[in-house]
Length: 149
Image 1 (spheres, one colour):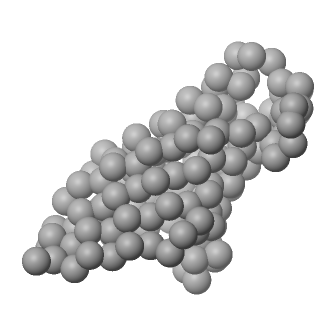
Image 2 (cartoon, one colour):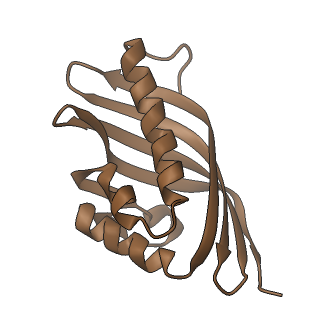
């Protein structure tokens, strides 16, 4: 992240920040895997390799990932902040944004998971709408896992 941020039209900056927020809110909408997947470009990538997991490519794969994940979740609460523009080419329709995420997930078995991560969003315009081309994350602190009582 550089400061000051790169030039970017105000309406584009707002659209990018709105997309980051929409992602956090969609993940909290348990059962709406299609809603999460719709925020990605058709060939978008949910890259979890930094967490020792897979790279999921395409809306169908992303939707399937969240369907599986949601099956064991009772509720989620994701909070995003420190949203920072790293690159913006409004003419080409590409941008990079980082953000911090603080998330809580309550499992259907009563297990609680707390995560503090840095999201890396590569965003691109698809058919006139900003979408996630790639989303990766790294942990800022180790996850906190509290087993069910």
